[in-house]
Image 1 (cartoon, rainbow, N blue to C red):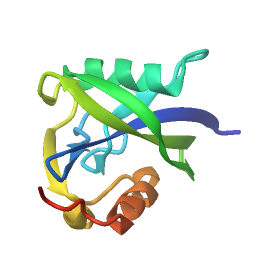
Image 2 (tube, rainbow, N blue to C red; image 1 turned 60 degrees about the vertical axis):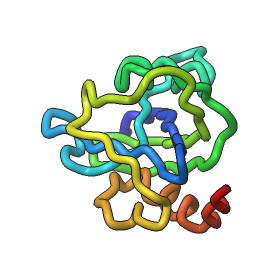
Image 3 (spheres, rainbow, N blue to C red; image 1 turned 180 degrees about the vertical axis):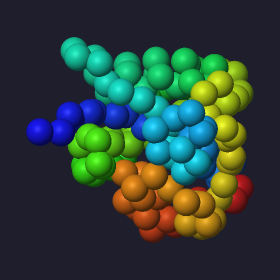
Length: 135
């Protein structure tokens, strides 16, 4: 039986763009894009896990909000439940500590990247949202 992993991922939007992270060559599933985040530890809330992971991976502080999308994908090695949460950047600027690079992209451009399979449904949902009117 495959290992089941619960992962919290951040959908961080700023100035009409979404933060995307490229997995490094050293990571499992190298060289594909994902929403940054990580494993939820036993007894940890989704929000606490996501805030901890973003601090560790991107060196910035976020406020994790509500669940945006929940999808389970079966990979060769494990079954991953990817729970994407809306998140707001509170302090600092994200930088790639573990990822190859970070990119801010408008929602309509997200499909131009090659995404990790577990992230694809959340990308599709984001692209269905209407862009917020500019003020």
